[in-house]
Amino acid sequence: MLAAVFLLLAFGLVEIYSVSLGRGESDIAMFKKQLAMILIGLGLMFFIAFNDYHWLRSFGNYFYILAIISLVLVLFFGRTINGTKGWFYIGGFGGQPVEFVKFALILFLARYFSAVSFRASTIKHLIVTGLSTLFLFFLVMRQPDFGSAMLLFVLWVIIILSAGLSKKYIFVLVGIMAILFVGAWGFYFKDYQKQRVLTFFNPSFDPLDQGYNVAQAIIAVGSGGLTGRGVGFGSQSQLKFLPESQTDFIFAVVAEELGFLGVGLVFLFFAVFFYRCIASLKQANNDFATLYILGVIGLIFVEMFVNIGMNIGILPVVGIALPFISYGGSAAVINLIMVGVLQSIIIRSRMSY
Image 1: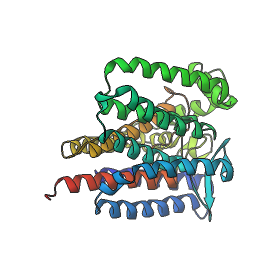
Image 2 (image 1 turned 60 degrees about the vertical axis):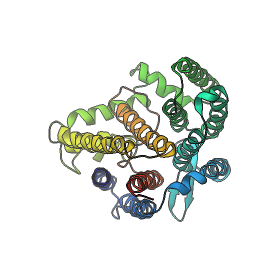
Image 3 (image 1 turned 90 degrees about the vertical axis):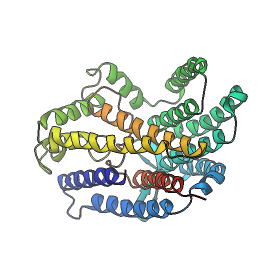
Image 4 (image 1 turned 45 degrees about the vertical axis):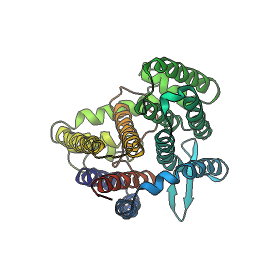
């Protein structure tokens, strides 16, 4: 698991370095910031891995409260970037509290369902956890950040299904999702977010704006060929045709510069990561650990799937980064913390008390 994570981080650093050069950054500041945050994340990961994870279960509710506080504070004191007020900036380093919120929601839901019998009072547990998730959902939508908000909803669905939700309630969840989407479209979506969805269904709808982004990403992915153009030699990324090449569209940079073989390695490393996570389920000796692992698998997989789908034009652009690879210090730190908890679960499951 750790080998796969380290290799994905290495891929990300190489491509962020390449993008920094293409932007003419003589001091490669973006690369240095990402490297610094990864080192911090690795330190926290090892610290958590070698300590008992059970304390996280006890503090699950406090993490949820802290998540609410962070989302409220960012609405008042956060910085707006690309139309979303979702960043704190301190000393030149920025952070997105929504990354912590994803982690906090996994802990909260895993703690809740590990302490109750789902089948004993299904409706009650759906209402309690659903409203708790919905509160975070609307706070994130106030930024507005539709992609992250939907991730929170998907996390809730994944964990309640893992906890033993009866299939008859799936139709109710689909209905709730449809209502939320319609409500968000009418009251929360900004014009540029609506354009992204419309562009997905009709790529020629906005060819010079949202459609342009996707078109350039597809060109970058296709031009990489078998072995790629080489790091630092991707025309789409180096000549700045590709927007947000360090975050939303970094997969296109990997495909253009490292080609099919590079993309194949990325898929291989993700496959190893997920395989090891699934294998660790057999070692988990309590419901909290099992639900936590399933939550992390669901979060990382959905983020990976959505980001790659955005880059190849099969999903709308919703601002979801590629885990372990995209530029983003707060995401890197939180992802490594989540891996640290996974490691702690594996280590503790092998110990006899």
